[in-house]
Length: 218
Image (cartoon, rainbow, N blue to C red; front, side):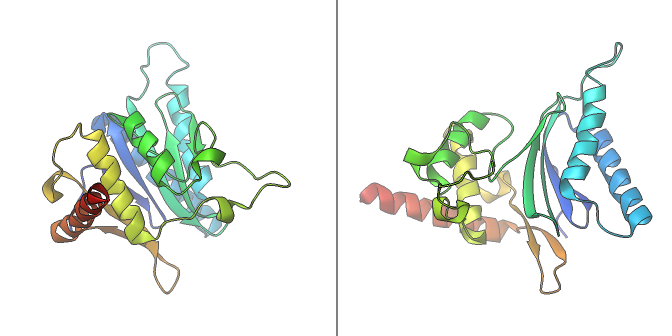
């Protein structure tokens, strides 16, 4: 199977993507794997995703609090699935803060990527807030499903390619310069971690380019 430089499997139902110092990330990834394994051994069930994220962030925050220690210079995107809240996405920064998202971007030029998500993810522009953070709905408002049309797997992959194009400063993106990762459920409700092969990634890139060309002609 293809290995990754940016995406790491934490346990069967969770993975993370790294932006920053890989050496620092390795320490935190080991902490996450250790916590997930201990929870599974103690309670005989998978650890809830947010609890796993909180453990890593508490560990990171401690390094900002005491003298003689430097913070971990790494940001994470945690993705996972549990029986409590289904599929989840969390972002964490070096300070130890974390937040839940429908879609977000970390790394270089992340603001450009977030701007694209605001317009292309499916939220109605006139009803959007400043950020796309997940908040509980208030009485009288439309349901979340009515306000946001969630993309399917292929739509999400195309959107990810658009974001990478946007954050690459106009540099042509090819399959050997990007990595597309999916986390899904099989028929037995087990999580499947998968990195797309180069030819599969190139197919998604071609679809995005064709879509851009057709919209340009229109």
